[in-house]
Image 1: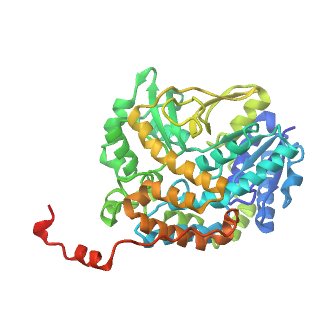
Image 2 (image 1 turned 180 degrees about the vertical axis):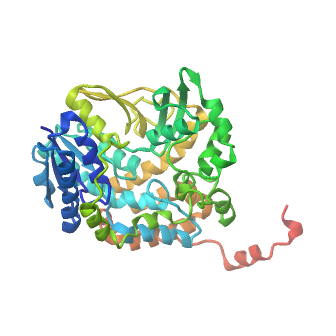
Image 3 (image 1 turned 90 degrees about the horizontal axis):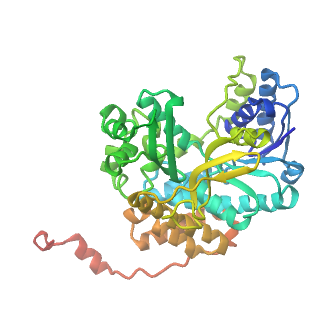
Length: 465
């Protein structure tokens, strides 16, 4: 009987979906679930929904309970699933709206960009606190993290607790593979692929059906207007760089210098009429601004329509079943590179194939990425490292440095403007980032003069050369 602890058990959808998936395997139909949350009402409704899943699925050997006490929940845990949000909607709103004043136009902002960096500052300390509890109470448990910013959090966690069994999980690899399988008109079981890189920016290095390379067909489809218009920036990646990239175009649009330059380019590449996740500004606020969350969760608990109990795409249940039964699984997960991808930094977090069985998780070495793809990944990795160091060193200057190296910030602002924005963000998030001990980012003197500003406004067109 496996004990599964879900930290963030009061989520609108996530905890219930993973519970359903775990129960769908015969080996874990008698699992014990303990939900943990900091919100009593969310926790209560989350547990009620899980109990409904148990009842409707006829899983008589399973049980679910809830607690506000994380340490109590961890006693005897075999598997720990983490899906948390620190700061809620107000923090998200600030980290989207403040950068916009400086011309930094984000769509999702949970992985890179000012939003991802600030989310790391407020979330990594919480994850490290969990790690201390896990190390003390249940050090043999397997930790499955679904929380963003995935690479930053995984980097900080594995630096602190390299001995714990940990993997960061996302659905972007299997989701992207499924999209291309359908676009190509192929049967799912006919496709074999190799995907590797970093989270939200992993590359389909090989995509085959019946031993036939499908990348040439994918490159043709990428410029089909019907496909391009609903998945623009990802298709631009295929068109120019030759390989499909994971995650939605909304995410991809903000990880680089190319698509969110101004209103014109956002209109060109991030038109969301045909696809909500195509990159429209501030889309993440729509996802989290849910004043009706309680009504929505209550409806899920009491809806007279029977639940759909088919297993979803998430890797978590597959990992647990493979470890419990020994039936091997191939998943994709995020962990320290340590030689898995030759031309990315050794300490970076990479997303690679991982074989799972009773012996746990064994990552598969990839070798070198094509150099242009490694270069794109490396731009993100530099930002990730600086954001993690900001937490580890409790240093506001590291926060600024991460912002300054972020492609979207660098494209949009001067260093003076990035420093001013970072100071404003840190002030707005002060209650969410106690790790910095109230330290402020230093204010640096702006050196250009008003006279120089006036000259910039009145440049003689004939002198522009």
